[in-house]
Image (cartoon, rainbow, N blue to C red; front, side, top):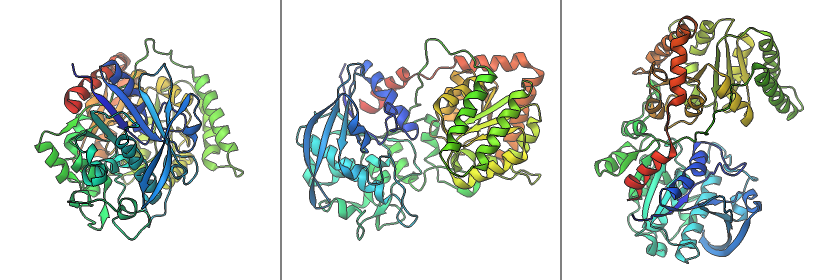
Amino acid sequence: MVRHKVLMLAAENGRFAGAKVGGVGDVIRDLPPVLNEAGCDVMVAMPSYGFLARLPQLEAVATLKVMFGGIVKSVELLRLVDSAHPEQVYIFHHPDFAPQGERVYCDDSNDRPFATDANKFALFCASVATALLTDVLAMPSVIHCHDWHTGFLPMLTRRCADYARLAPIKIVYTIHNLAMQGVRPLTSDPSSLHAWFPNLSGELSDIYDPDYRNCVNPMRAAIRLADVVHTVSPTYASEILQPSDTEQGVFGGERLQADLQEKADRNALFGILNGCNYPAKSPRKPSKKTVVATALAAVEKWMGASVQLSSTHYLADRRLLTWAEKAKGITVTSVGRITEQKVRLLFSPAPNGKIALANMLDSLGKDGVFIMLGSGAAHYEAALTKLAGQYANFIFLNGYEETLSELLYHYGDLFLMPSSFEPCGISQLLAMRAGQPCLVSSVGGLKDTVTHHANGFVFDGANDAERVVNMQRCFDDALALYHKQPEAYKKISVQAKSTRFTWAESAKEYIAKLYG
């Protein structure tokens, strides 16, 4: 069997504290060791963001002279030496990788979206290309790029004469979030294609944005220039071939469906479901007392982070104390980012004029409770705080705490995840692993992992109006089953816990479909 030498480029890695923001961090943490076991030699490359350069067990490899923006920058290449992990991790370190403090992603004004991050990741990709060109990094048989942050690497290897020696290396590109494309101007801006790479040559139309021809689109560039494109679930791979219609709640190709269809026509677009790690022994279900105590401690910590008392945290504290004294009823949970993708349907209007979430809280009644853990868009956080003030059965925990999230996965009776789109989803896998059935929309990875009335509850619809009605019907169905047919509900819970989506199976598909 051919032993593939794979170089992975990514912005995140959940193996390191502070280096994970979303699902890509889980993949880069969990997949490389499994690929190594399956017969690949994996290297992982990422920027330092400042703080990763202080990791223990780092050794200096070289100082790279990287041509970027018309000047030479000295970028340190560091290697993590850890015998417990077979994959090699390379950290690229330069002050420009921490332009707004030591964080993975930066914030920019609305008139210059992605400007700071694009500068940072363009330099990172140029640094990786330089390390390969100078043989400081071993030449791989496959370069595996993840999301738009790494889309500059295919531009350099396939469209810049300076890196022509790297052009034959196979490129695999994984889409984790198609909506985020990193679009920047071609010229006339310090954060622009010409400012970074003035030596790009040849046919460049395939790296331009399809609608804004004076802009570069690194997501589109990677799709066009990669040999193989991969999404993190089979259903999402088919959904992105359709145009998006946000008014109807349809999230498809995000203006890139023609490029993706071209890849599909050449049998170069694959959907492979992300995996999940399963412990040999599942933790016991925590007590309500433990959940309440952990949640109260988290809320107190969040309160202490600000001089002014947040009404959101105050309400959460009051609601938790009240819930602690209540008799056991059904506990509905949600853990995740508070974004348009995740909560759009919950705030969509129902036929009676109320928003969907208000109707669901009405159905839940005074004996049940809905606990939502997460943070994100300010306007949604404010709306959730308002609901928490109106409904005694709604506890909004506005933050994130790893231990608390694990407790909620194991304590809850029904996990709510009505995403408008979901490339794969990790929260539903973690809830199912803990034996908590999920109520999900029939999109992307949710459709591929949850089966209605087998290991969870699933609703669909042609538009948001239909989905809201069907979501309420599905929610009422789940509540009725829980209260009136507890044995049937328990069977669904047991099936959810026994369902398996392993990284070992996913790795086999990676090797056969992407790297071969």
